[in-house]
Image 1 (cartoon, rainbow, N blue to C red):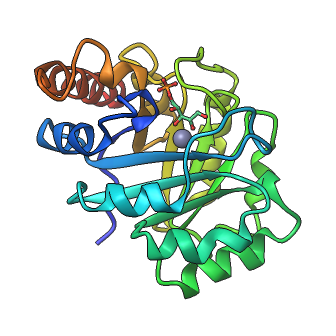
Image 2: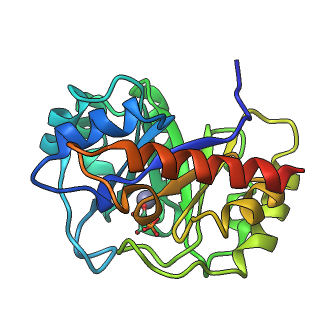
Image 3: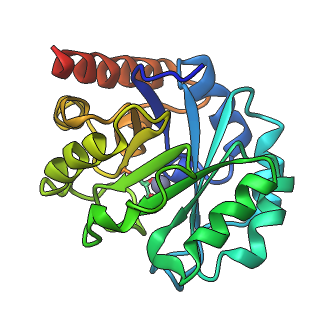
Length: 229
Ligand code: DX5
Ligand code: ZN
């Protein structure tokens, strides 16, 4: 059953890298809907994080949805490894290669939910031929590579047009970058249902003192719901 309610997906890019297991357990206990995992290659984006072995290790600490955002090019040689690592969603960038259609077919064949991410400079029309193949679109509301960047407001109109293009297809609209209690109402009103947030979820807390994670998640969710009116 397709769930269009607001979902909060903390990005562990803002977590303690030496304590990912405890961080994943803490955010789920504090109300995270999905756990967003940012894979970066230092080539497609100007930063490096981790690969499939880390995802497999994280999997043991995540009960719910593991939402893996692949910011890597080429991506095709690594899809099987990320699928075996236990990802639920595998999201690839439309800008990351010439054969996005084949990439999405491969993800589906591996039994995973395919997602497509688009950078702020990429028009939503790049998705026209892909909407029947995917489970989610990730609209980047910052240029990918780093957490804690400012929200790119020009993406709001794009989110609204994307939601119209999707129509009644069972496709989530995820937003990623600069999501806070200030921007959550705007993206929810524009049509986003999955909100990735790094800095805004992890601020003020730690695995030993995780109550702030819960307060932050509840505040972002409440702000998004207020935006829906
Ligand atoms: C950016 C990543 C995001 C990032 C979001 O390249 O894809 O998931 O962690 O971080 P915040 O919410 O801090 O902008
Ligand atoms: Zn991300």
